[in-house]
Amino acid sequence: MPVFAATPEIIAEAGRFLAQAGIVAFPTETVYGLGADATNDLAVAAVFSAKRRPVFNPLIVHVPALAIAERLARVDERARTLAAAFWPGPFTMVLPRLSGSYISDLATAGLDTVALRVPAHPIAHALMLAARKPIAAPSANRSGHVSPTTAQHVEADLGDVLHMILDGGPTEVGLESTVVDATGARVRLLRPGAVTAEEIEAVLGVPIDRPHAGDVDSEKPVSPGQLISHYAPRARVRLDAATALPDEALLSFGDGPATGANIINLSPQGNLLEAAANLFASLRRLDATGVATIAVMRIPETGLGDAINDRLRRAAAGR
Ligand code: TXA
Ligand code: MG
Picture 1 (cartoon, rainbow, N blue to C red):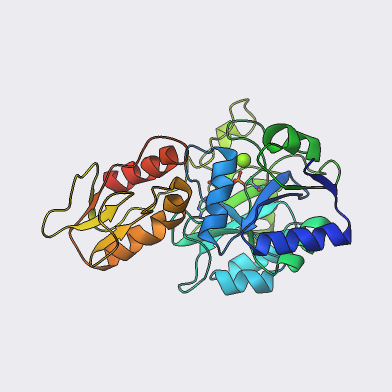
Picture 2: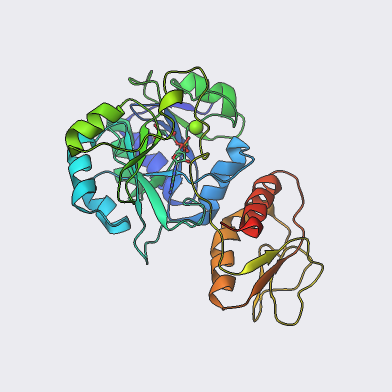
């Protein structure tokens, strides 16, 4: 049984497990999260695999304090004001990622931004301190299911694939955090949550953009990821390539060419978890060579292959 009462000993063990690329479900004040070391691509890939997410949405990176957020993202005066008002709490800010930040490219889905949150839950805090890592965590439900607000919900959905679910009782808020994009001239509401647009506007003293204001009260949930931009390389992307043409870079897989000059093999063993972990960093590296086109070999449409192919198709479609 993977559900454990969150004693200090269990939290210490969960922290060690996280730091060694394990994944752990834990309570926050909003919903239970499925956490991984946000600096480890393979650990983050394991989260997507466990959730059976068909797409790689960028994940929220949980940090214990604003000071840690400042090491990962550019926190300007406005963001600091919002942090002072709403952290710790059910509030997530998308901010420009600092170049040289060691956050996994898979956690941010290859974007130059990162979503950060300081949760207000003692177990979440203790876990972050025990792991000594920022924790990337989507809600701990099977993809397409509703977010879990008890450890038993998590167990029902993911008990067969998780080793550790920390039980902190029912969550207080029961609804995911509010997500805002604070990278632009105006703050934009990306996902409504416990912190309301009115509260944010009261703190800022200026209106924020609410592209989905009409959906907030409706039955129809705002589809996550609907409002986010997707990573697209500068180079053209050619899919289903059998081989690379002379002036192309090659993203290969499995039996394809091994990593070499202008070639990266996502996983010579044909392991989709490894391929997912390497995907965004590899695209970025090939793009940085300055080639006009990145040829991509076929990736199987099974398991994480669906999410990999979804992202590759978006990359091929451009911005
Ligand atoms: O309450 C919550 O927020 C829970 C707990 C565990 O913290 N987490 C959660 O994560 O709901 P998730 O992965 O289910 O939702 C993350 C949301 C998605 O809508 C995603 O598109 C958005 O945040 N997001 C993350 N990074 C982003 C980025 N760089 N740019 C735009 N949106 C981003
Ligand atoms: Mg979710």
